Length: 88
Image (cartoon, rainbow, N blue to C red; front, side, top):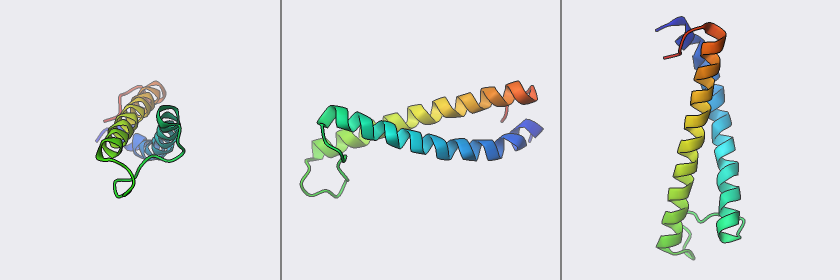
């Protein structure tokens, strides 16, 4: 493994945690805009329809994937600027 990859490991872990929190906030806000409710449905929520639960899950997955990719890419670019080589 390259030195930049080793140096990136702790940065990647921190960015992963930060991206999870950012994605959760983004999903919560998006759900409020879409449904006007504070809480998205849980898969085991008896009072919610299949349609509502699956839409919420798909939206949450899409938001998490986009935020994670953006944060990971930004971290890799920043690592290259600092170390001169691409991590991984």
